[in-house]
Length: 305
Image 1 (tube, rainbow, N blue to C red):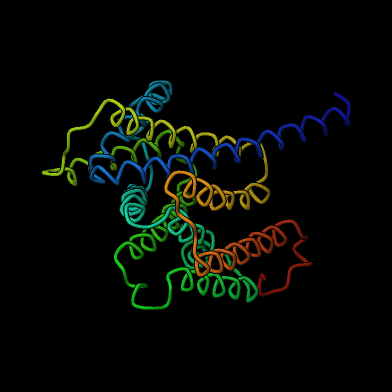
Image 2: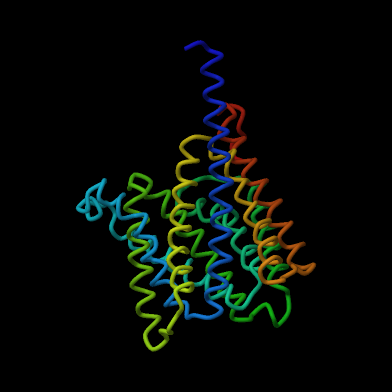
């Protein structure tokens, strides 16, 4: 293989990774829109149960290929439990929030995930960040406050659901970094089992009859979410995370488009301003992290910024 061929192949792999990330984000946005449509008519617990069953349609062959016993051979069981708990809270709180709020509003809270992760990684993962990134974290938090609407509505239950869900999402990702030696199949399987158990508990006395279309929609919800996760996981193996991470902000764009098309939701000024601040702060954090990782050690200031 000539050097030119090697460079071309590497470029093709990176482009494939970018396309897979964009497709995965689109599927996640579709999953979110479908979830909002379903929780308008059915209890969150019922949706979680059937969604989890749908996820196992995709996970089943992967579990068989890996070997079912591998699911039980995990290290740091305490951290595994915390991650599963946080991932379950993330999904349940997201659906609880979108049942009452526009899709773009809830997605704005979730777009602050990288900002939370930067702050949490400093304390839990020992990833030193300097004053520039801390400033970006504070600015990002200001964007969250603006999106929450600094008034009595800021304390509305749906808004708190969205905020708590986004924090749970960030914590689950931090735990995933801790547990990166665990296979994706094992991680996703346990969080799916936890969502199934939680859904069963929440759906007691709240189970409703549904049409074939409704059942199919709930099953498809799990299939789409699992495929999105797998696409994004594969993309991260083909292209640098520093290149792919900013692409997750396309989720916000899709949330605005799908929210308008299917629910006639139009983001208000505060959501747009808050979202813009969060995106800029998040992109700056990505930029500084990437700069620190690519510069030679002697070129990085002592405070790590």
